[in-house]
Length: 253
Ligand SMILES: O=C(O)CCC(=O)C(=O)O
Ligand SMILES: [Fe+2]
Figure (cartoon, rainbow, N blue to C red):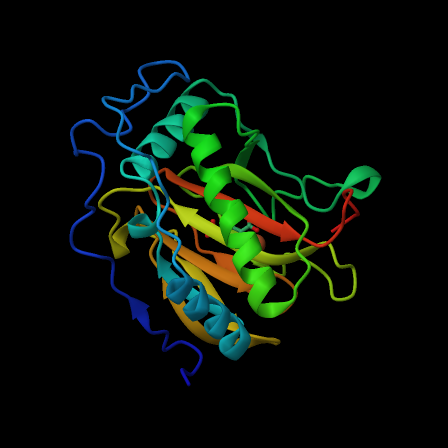
């Protein structure tokens, strides 16, 4: 168990292995169309063993860090990163609020990121949604979570942006139950800041780990149990946050 101020640093993978494979999902060229070079299937690799390990990690520790790129279709992380870049440059992301509905506030002392909701209409988003469906079903089969749907958004943290320590959901609301954050940034280093600081479940004073937002890495955790925060970024940081929910129609967080 790590003590406060002595986080275990999660070392990024040396080589992002996607993006350059020929004949796979191409970069978006200034709009949201995607070039797919041949007929090879753009399949996710969601096998039963991997799902077992995710469910075990969630059940045991309430959170785990993943190399998601190897389970997503070839080139997808790069294509999603490109969409985020286009949305950011086009000023198509809005400052994120806290809470829902009438109670929503834009408290910039808590949260500074900008977001754009995914709708699954572009090919990269549709492929990601297919993967998220498989994940939802796999977790339901193993953990009986009764996850009914998910919602997800791109997030951009520009230099200086952060998100203070929070939980993604409040116990008993059955709204957001499992959180997944996928990172989209090539060549991210410690000096770039923007780590996700994960605390021990139910204990905001004990750091469990700090995760670099390196392309293809992801963090999966129980929304009601794991406090976390995004440290100030020193360069523009892209991610996708996703929440698997038990409610059929959106309830407040
Ligand atoms: O981007 C991250 O690392 C986490 C973002 C987050 O905690 C959130 O959007 O609720
Ligand atoms: Fe969060």
